[in-house]
Length: 165
Image (tube, rainbow, N blue to C red; front, top):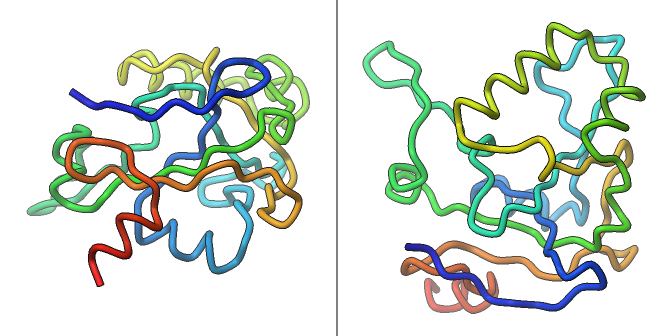
């Protein structure tokens, strides 16, 4: 079972951008979480995705290919392949909820229904999701914590990385 640290926010709920360590390193170097552009239709506005899920956002788990077959892996499998990571942000930096995003992003209803179906299949909830059309930058003071899942817990990324060197 995963344990999390607790940091109080104005809303009482922590908001995270979930990723993996190899992507986290680029995000930290660039100092911003950029809107996703992969598989984004030209008419759609790219967006940065966040979640109020405290353990892990299931839809952030990448699919992996093995022996020519692509499948969605579990969180436990992900931990074996690469360390999950997350950046906690100030909820004010991600002002769009699911409803607002659907209205403003220019996304076709087929895509919205597909995302909702994936959420249901992966036991995620669009009500946990928040979005931003603009990059969320560390220098703007929006990053509250950077953590890596290590030894069955979410830990401060600096602590984890200093132990591995």
